[in-house]
Image (cartoon, rainbow, N blue to C red):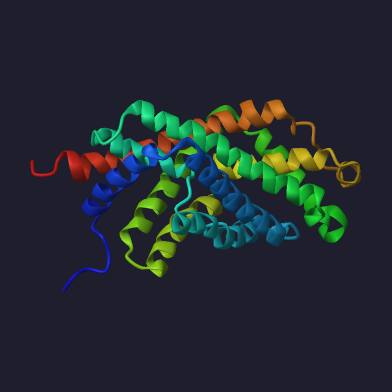
Length: 275
């Protein structure tokens, strides 16, 4: 009787081939799939913010977010799009000598920038076409406040919270690959991402939406005035704090977390195979 799931050893071997295939895709295909992946994650962020902006209890807000946001990764997994954080696992393909370090970095750079573009498109659409007008603009104020808080993150916190985040995201990717049916793959992607959201860990692609949306909302006079009237301090919400104060350390932590998991799984299930 055949199993209805792949074993950990089979999943690692399967990803070695999948990751290598990712590095061979034409640049334009990576760009298009990267933009779509960024947009899917951004839409998950937008839906989550819309669901929780009126909730004052932090634990309730985090729990609701944890139940909603993971479907963004589920859509990425099921559509086969290119997500930078998940692609940290391509290190498995490199260690298996299925692709080179250069080809992995090529994939990362193209996908990272494309994810950013997808997030910016969704952020601009939400800010400038009325999606944030809920409760007279309070959704926009919530978005700006969240972005300002993320911009105030210390470098070391960004790295560590980013590490834990992508450890879980990449675990979700691997568990999803172990499933042989749609429900199993979605559930595999769901649980680890649910954990990272509830814990408040940092995901660079999600932050490409969260902080970009906050920065763009800050340029809308009505939103900025409402934030001032509500006593929200937006001084930390600047492009420099976004790129250097949040995105840089979080991206570094995400890469370290994903690569650490990939290298560990490869060592345990492939390097020592047959030894």
